[in-house]
Image (cartoon, rainbow, N blue to C red; front, side, top):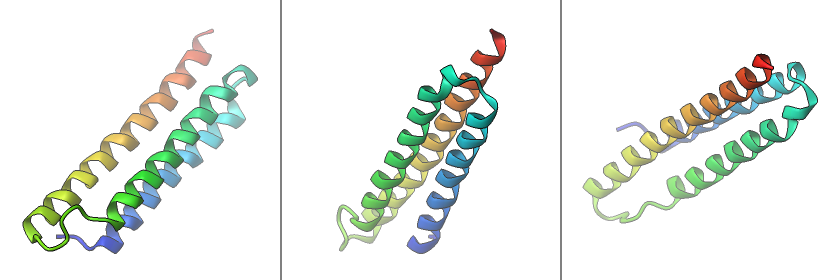
Length: 99
């Protein structure tokens, strides 16, 4: 099992990449897309805070099997959440390019 420290680093790295891409998109997209891009940044920060809170508080700390399942679930939610953020950002950028 990967360490909790590495899980936190992975989460922070992925969320920061999503936020960085959003700010780059903000620079290149028209002004009417600003609110949509800022909403994606807010959801990225919310995902980071929610998952960090869950990482720091395992459900059943005295049962190793449940702890492994807990962290595996967090890792799945992390990858799904970040992929969803990148997909939404891509959709916002595509929508503005089609006009």
